[in-house]
Structure formats: structure tokens, C-alpha cells
Length: 277
Image 1 (cartoon, rainbow, N blue to C red):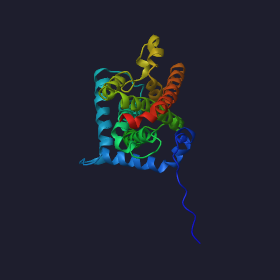
Image 2 (image 1 turned 120 degrees about the horizontal axis):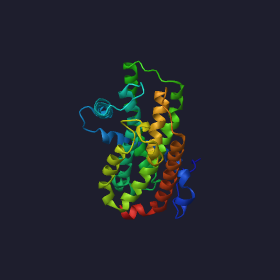
Image 3 (image 1 turned 30 degrees about the horizontal axis):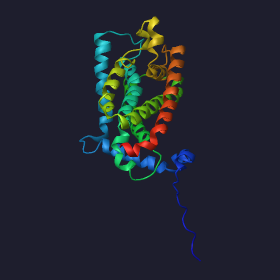
Image 4 (image 1 turned 90 degrees about the vertical axis):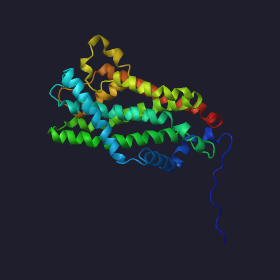
């Protein structure tokens, strides 16, 4: 008695619209392989491999500590300045790395997009996941700094996953916008590094938001990463670290808008990717 034929995946003209979100789950293994591929490519033929995920943030932390603490003499409110800097650098490094990788993800996978059907959202999301892996590895430095300075976090550290989720949403939303736009306008690839560099100076990575004059803080919070970084410091440092409620809510609203508008725009032009790339 012959066995029944295997289930077939039928791709019809309107399948993309009707079953797209179900397909995201059905192709979850592809997401894993895309992320693993990107992770291998990132450190391929490097002498020290994944150790670069530790060296880069550590050296940046040293430079920022020297400039903002040693030269500018900015206050740290009793917190060791390296920990203060690294608590702000972790979310920024994750965001900037995800933004850079995600923006070029579709163009870099053009050969894959033109050969087989799968939800294209998986490609930029895989890039964000790779940056998140680097984020987790870099967290080892923060643990080492805490041990070195005998710094013990308070109960607020339990809220850290919430701020990680907000950082993930910000990176995904902005990355989807840039990934979709770069497919159409390739010149934007050369603009992204300037956006990231400019955003670093506009974000409280090497200093606390409290050094910003009171009358400018609301406008300063229009940078959605301000609320994310302040949230990380509030969760990690404890003590007198505080979140500006209005600024944090504003950042949270902006992150939500960026995420959902990014998904909307990506889905809007997704069916044109194959023709363009």
C-alpha cells in the first residue's frame, strides 16, 4: 500500500498576502540558517574571530572614558566611569551594528531573492539577530567591569530584558526602512555610515542625559535611542540613575512608530524587490 504523497507548498498569486505571516513561522529554520551564515561571514578569515566583538567595544569604552571623564570631567554620580560608558555603549553598539548590517542585507542577498520564495522579512531580521549575538558577547565586558570595580547592580537589573526588547524594536524598524529604501536608492548605502556616526554624537553614550540643559531635554529625546540608553543605565547602574518620564515615553512612542511603519513600508514594496535587485 503506497504512502500518501508529501504535502506540497503551493505558491499562488495571492498567497503572499494571505499566508505571509504564517510563512514567517513556517520558514523559521531558514531564519536560523541565514543568521548563522551572516555570523560566519562576519568573522571569516579573521585571525581572532569572535574576539572582535569584545575588542571593538572595549577600545571604544577606553577612548570615551579618557575623553569624557579625564578631559571633559563630566560627572558619573559615584559610578565608575567605564561602567557608565559601557552601559550606554551596549545598546548603541547593538543598534548601530544592526542598522548597518540590516540596511545592506537585501542587496547582499540578491542572488537568493531571485531564486526562491520565502518571506523577505527574514533577511533583515537575520542581520539584526547577528548583531544581537555580538551584543550578548559584548556583555561579557560589562560583567568583567562590574567584577573589577566590585559593582553590584540593584533589583532594577531584572527590568533589563524590557529595554533590550525596545532596542531590538528600534534596530529592526530603522533597519527595515533602510533595507527597503536601499534596494531602490543604492546611494543610501554611502549615507548610512554618516547617519550612524552622527547618531553617536547625538546619543548619551559617553555621558549621562542629565548633562543636557533642562530646556533642551525634550527635544533631545526625539532621538529614540536616548530613552533606550537611559533605560539601560537605569536598569544596570541603579542608585541615583533616573529616567526622564516624558522623554522616555516620547522615545517609546517613536520606537513603536518606527517599527510598525518600517514593517508597513517593507511589505508595501516587497513584491518589487526581485525586479529591482
